[in-house]
Image (tube, rainbow, N blue to C red):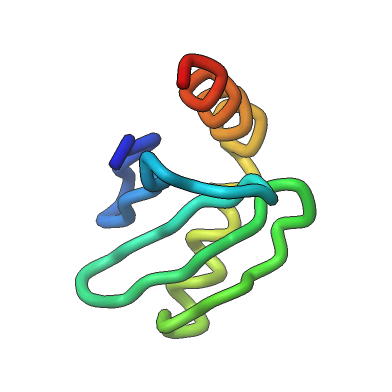
Length: 77
């Protein structure tokens, strides 16, 4: 499970056996969300609205980096 970033209590990661479309998982405490990178669409969410808003802001800021890390990781497999 490659971790992309840990920031402000959030952990951003993907699993080693992921599938398209490119997406990341976000956890904070026991809460989680799944966000598609291209559209920033939330496809699963068990977070409070305030935390989801914060997570989306971080994903928006780091989107290019997350996509690059996804591409790097899965091109090696």
